[in-house]
Length: 427
Image (cartoon, rainbow, N blue to C red; front, side):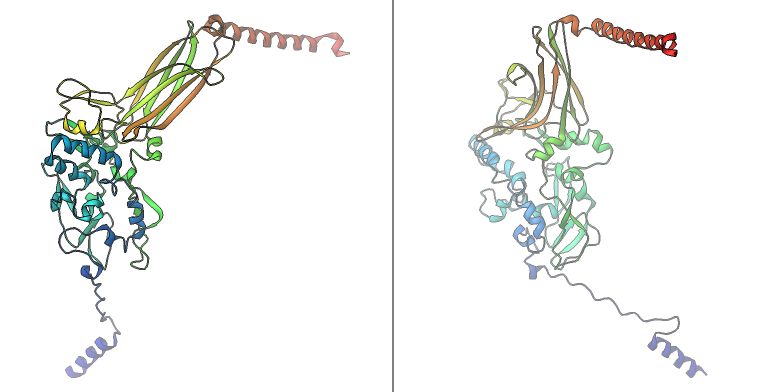
């Protein structure tokens, strides 16, 4: 009897029938970094990442991050700063414009990797950022790559889900900077941290690295996934779409006391930090002008929004290099905070005229380049203003005109009633 029962149990195990089943272990996916050129220590070049992440690489390669070392604005400021401050300045500048040098110490840029700017492997091997420490970044160099996608597999490297890579602190390590003198030069992260976007849990990546439709995270032949790639162009202050989404201007104007009175409303509608942000030489200019009907400018006034730094002689700092090398204090800062609305008033003395005037408000972003100042239009508004005699523009005339119209309407109504009740109309 015992032998028969044992035989029945064995049959159940072998055939898979009954309540007991035998499941074969799933095949283990193999990770082979060396086969794909992934370094097991140190940084891997972005040209290796390109083999599997072709679409992302193509977008990133045209970004300010990829060109952080070769961008003409940086190159011009870098040479000026190194000439002023010597070899130690190289480390200061390259720590963010070629951040792999923080580990490689290649401050003379002999390694091709150093010319990749903010390269793939720098960000995707970071494990933490301490905004309060002298060295903000914590590294985990090697074949493990970190990102915001869960349950991802790569045959080329190990993967680790990292919520940190979706947070502003990842950006803050470089986009917040105090000079050796303690002057806050770059405050983009701090501006975000103190504003409404941080309180709502909206991070830098939510605006600057939105998921791109039609752009796969990895080549289809490598791994089939529905995950879409974040935008590695990381568009910012040099991207027209970001500038035009950042701030708006509106205006209200009228003519009284022989002058055009203008109220312009400037609002930071779409930026999670101040407008402008970044290098203190950047500024936003509000220009309000009175134009003739033909478009000729008759009068113009302006307001400038900027953080102004001073050197030890009390003179304003006017170049990017001097901002980092010579600034000793913040003289003023009237930039627009996130969601801030600023109302500016202007008065233009204009004599009465039978022809109207055009009031134009133009909001322009300006930044320095080796070729000169670049202007980018952010927003504009226009309004037609009649320049009649003061009485014709006054509230009294408006009330009198309204009363005349109402009286005329009432008279017409009475006349219609009388005509309807007349004996002649009834026959």
